[in-house]
Amino acid sequence: MKTATKFAGFAVGIAAVFAAALGIGALVGPTGTTTDPAGHDVHTPDDGEASGDSRPGGLLVTDDGYTLQLEKAPAAGAPLRLRILDENGTPLTRYTTSHDKDLHLIVVRRDLTAFQHVHPVLGTDGAWSVPVDLTRAGDYRVFADFVPEGGENLTLGADLHVAGDYDPRPLPAPAKTATANDYTVTLDGTVTAGAESTVTLSVARDGRPVTDLEPYLGAYGHLVALRGADLAYLHVHPEGRPGDGTTPAGPGITFAMTAPSPGDYRLFLDFRHEGVVRTAEFTVTVPYETRERPVGATGTTAPSTQTPSTVPGRAPGDQHGDHGH
Ligand SMILES: [Cu+2]
Image (tube, rainbow, N blue to C red):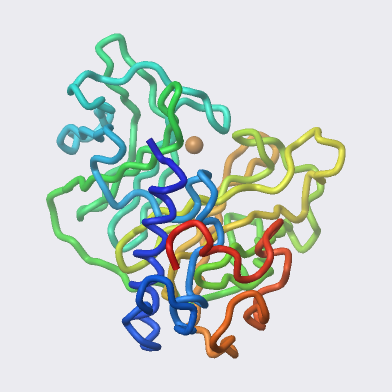
């Protein structure tokens, strides 16, 4: 169960790690003090919400009582098979549909190439299966993103080894545009560590904005973001839905994402147009902040780079009221 308390505790841990990573003081002040600026400036914005946004997923093979059990890499042409096991080791067969599917499976090589986002089929034996392209040798990461019936969204991750000569490729340089066949996708927005950021991805073809994107997985686009160093899987939410009366069918698709730390990320946008799903890929570097920090008190000054919209419904400084600072 993900209680608010559990999330808050985790957020404190993240804050401490993040503070250390920033080199601004590894120690969060003693419980009850309000004098440590590092401890009060560095946090995840959603730490009071049970939305799942406040920690990256995909780093654990077992979480919240569920385990991703992956079969060995299949022979060429055979499907990849996996199970989600509950805490008794029984295959989970009851899911809550999310983004049109009971299970979203992401397969990517460890160097962030060969990205695939597929939707397996659940067999009567409780095993999911799906064809995947594993023609490039190397280690892969497999992410299962699902909602157990009656539970909360989980993303489990496991490694898959594909024998052969592995020639890992460097992460492409950060860029604001990406191409997918004759489509060009442009990324607008700045991703900030530890705060929800809004990014808009705009689709054009042959230089003309595409305004008739087709719904895919309940949205005009589906965005997966992975942290380069460890393939942490970020939860990303599209803003608006097709048919809600306000969300346009392109060219721009807007998402809210939270990068848990500075570093390099790879973004994969799936969008559908004229019946075909295409993927545009971007590298985004989330910088270390050199922003002004409020000193000595909470509730007075918001970090200069945070706009009120990044912390909806919450006054600056009140994030720590429920977990002991
Ligand atoms: Cu999916």
